[in-house]
Length: 235
Image (tube, rainbow, N blue to C red):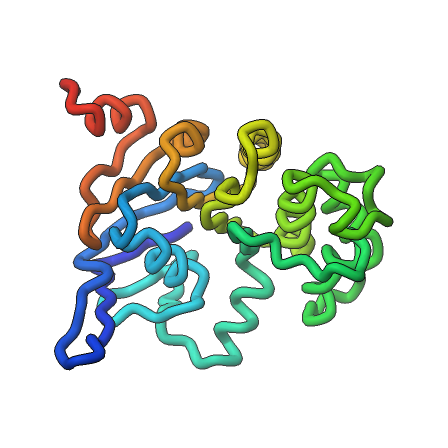
């Protein structure tokens, strides 16, 4: 579904010159995969996530999505791509405090060009196990439930790709477990998921782990082999 070919991203330094956030990143992601992107702070994890979601453009290289080079679409085409193809889940829930869970989930549908949007919000909340919390506001929900509402909002337009950037970063272990069970279940039902995390326990839920080091792909393997490599064992 996704081919990244020698993706590079550099940013200008305040005092002059540039800094490389990504260097020669080449990856292939198949439909239905659950991939975790790991690495230390500053390794390029979020930069790679932003490029996958067309929130940022690479300085060089190609980003092919289902065979189309989408890296340098104009602003309007990027917005259409994000609305139709990608769902985003962030560490901060970004829910509107005075609106219900259902109303929060339905917000992306305002920009949808679907012929019918009836029932999509309800179906998305049911998919994350919150059918009984549709009329509750965020203040009436736990942190884990709020993140599940955010996941439902990301799902409401039925995107091909779900991008989750540190989705458990603001949660206690029990709530984090609930969120990861939801994401794992979505993947088992066929959803393609790319997860950015610094937490090895969270990454272990994925089927493949891509480890970045200084903007480069250091490890790209299934999760069992990756765990061995990162611990300095033999593979």
